[in-house]
Length: 322
Image (cartoon, rainbow, N blue to C red; front, side):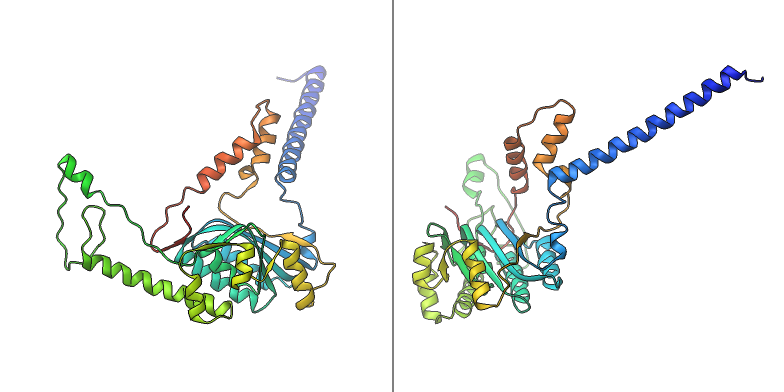
């Protein structure tokens, strides 16, 4: 069936309209994506990172064997435009293995570039362990520093099981296999075995502090009773070098490591799974607003922090518990 002239004209107009809306939709999506990137801050500092600068790396919350953070420390070590690194630490500690692996990564970095630590709220236990890996440590006068030590915690449900009439039986190759168990009271032999593990890691921690802070082991042992110190007390005891903030740490690198005073400080962040634009609270709030949904930025951040910090700590821990 042949089309009339009017039909042909109408079809051409329809095709033009469809093409117009397709292009418009594409442009709208592109603008939305770019806006999300800007709102999440992912474009901030991208150009600056290509020029000479000082890198800031934040180490916050519970310390674990953090693969993304370890990868970042290695990457920063190899980036030629990074002339120095300042660590911003605010952590109560965490797993001993996590502290050890990050400590070693910071030491490897410090052999290539100047590294200084600026303590925020606290650097305790494994958090302080990591701080000692740097060349210089500063903390605010009211910061908390120290809590040098190791602990091993486990629950015991035996009393509850007795009350409800539940018995837990097991057959094992040797008495110390899979002990301590939460289903029975520990024996003196079992506690002694765990104590040997704790004391071995504790002595390693003390030796590390003595070596990194240039003090005798006897002096380190006096400070390694689990006590926490303020920034002012930590200076007096030799646990840190100076009372101050990030500016003081950078000033030290400028004066003692010949770092250019004109260099700016650019923050580098680990590349974590899910660390995309939608994991940024501000980006989520902005995107929701585009669809007429009102979200509170503070509530969104609290929810994300709650989820991200629900960590299970396995094995020995170097953590300050208040």
